[in-house]
Amino acid sequence: MPHILTPETGARFAALTLGHVTREYPNKPDHTLAGPDDARTPAALHPVFYGSFDWHSCVHGYWLLARVLRLFPEGPQAAAIRALFDRQLTPEKVAGECAYLEAPTARGFKRPYGWAWALKLADELARLPDPRWARALAPMAEIFAQRFRDFLPLSPYPVRVGTHFNTAFGLRMAADYAQGTGDAALSDLLRATALRWYGEDVDCPAWGEPSGDDFLSSALIEAECLRRLMPADAFGPWFDRFLPRLAERRPATLFRPATVTDRSDGKIAHLDGLNLSRAWCLRSLAGALTDGDPRVLILREAAEAHLAAALPHLADDYMGEHWLASFALLALEA
Image 1 (tube, rainbow, N blue to C red):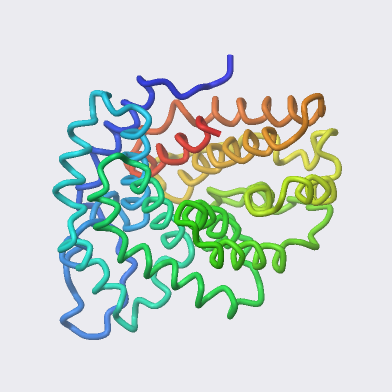
Image 2: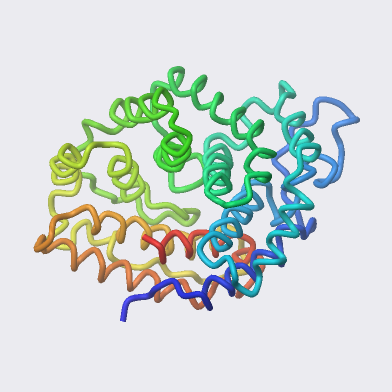
């Protein structure tokens, strides 16, 4: 049976996430010191997103909670999520996040992964019935939207690694915000950049996957980025050229779940995330193909194998617990 998102699963993901978004330590700050006064605690640096081991994981933890609240507004964690948002997503606390971003040393802070998740969170909050939280976060979201507008024209090359620096992931997630806000100019910029960076790619070998630090498939997230940003009639021919032997289950490495040997090691634990993010992309790409295409079943079977490998291990250790559920939710919803 395919893995599906149920109210019970959503409640479990929310309970896990509520357990870490306000857990300040352990913490891995991505912070540049310009002087001794910059040596501050995570909560002093980031009034909202100080938990979850690192800033970007805290941001997408809030996204998961917003998403679960929208899907299951009467769920067992709904009241706790609303209380957290009331307490944390306030204009005053978001102003503290914005002040951090205005420092010259923060120009490249969390580019592009954190930028993308911040916009994804803003988009999800805007879809909730209560508008207060989206309004509160809007100034921070606009800072990151503007950073995309400023950065993308300056960047001649994509970043194809399977970690936070992957540019295809950034474009793909930012596209939801651009569409949700009706920002046609930002959507056009994201699309033009994706085509400039990836539009001529053919016969992807995926020979470098997986590396020991991956939580994204550089091949599959690129395909998912183009699926999201290209018109459907243009994406199909591009996808055929990009992975021309998919019907033969090649490149074979894309169909084998990664092996995770030590979930207490933060880098090795990334591989559980790789299995989940692959499942998300595999399912999403299968949905873009026409009925009767033999690749649909191949992609869906591979997605189920990757989900089976990762879903039992979301809370095995805090190195995975503080972030994996967000990617599990993406995969189950795809």
